[in-house]
Length: 90
Image (cartoon, rainbow, N blue to C red; front, side):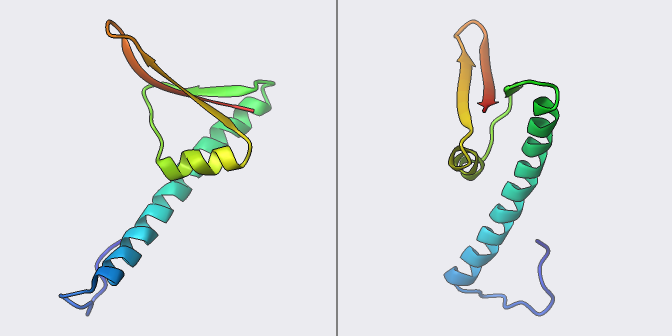
């Protein structure tokens, strides 16, 4: 979020938190839009899951998906072959 012209130079902690929350909310919405596009494509291919390789999502995104009934599993690989894969299934 760009700085608003005339914004106070010495803002309060509450004002800082409000801006941070707004930015986080927008980031989560962008991430959810991208994830739901992948899920939508997968379900119309007859799939019941989608895997994202070497990707992680915001905690709030994962919680949102869990609350919608999706299952989220992580695969971290092993010491010889590390990974950070997330599978979302339904």
